[in-house]
Length: 244
Image (tube, rainbow, N blue to C red; front, side):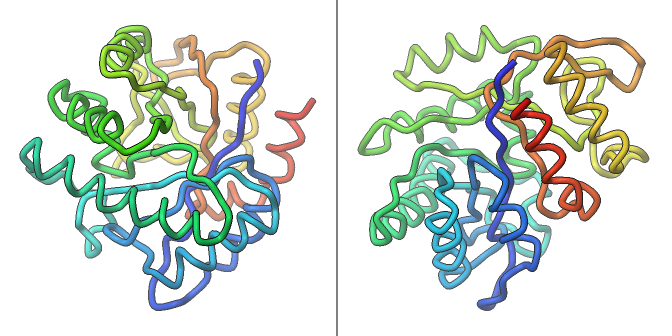
């Protein structure tokens, strides 16, 4: 199972640079960069893009709900038009800044609550897909790989959107193939469990759910969260496992 490795980066503010960002950037294939709504700012975006250029890493937009106080992890109610507009605003910012640094934005990966909400809400997912479909040029959309993946692929194809399906190295899965909420114990894996899950995904294309069942996952890219210190500490080992 061949997997790209991605991380959510650029999620600090006021010109700061999270120390782990460069350490992570050196080992990932894809950098999903915060667009300023849930985290990050104009200077953070610029510096993160500079790192992506330095390490020849593919860049993607990481838009979220306008919720800096809650780091985009709180659900919000948005109309279809509002959601499409807030997505376009954030994607366009990353696209324009990328082009100014001779980089090309390759994909969109929604952040936090927006990502989780679209996985269970058909109308919200359609609005996200419409925002990508309505962008001025083709761009991939990252969606979580679940047992509903083929349905989601058909939804996207009907709108002319190409998906990259995503699995997670450092998050526990529930019995439906969704992520266990961060508020629950054990939702974020430690170093040992993260490496075990990566090995299982690489060898068998599956994860073990919270109920102990094996769940098949067909994914194109594997996420490691930049805000999980234990995962960042083993990023080199994760990349090595994927490269084997």
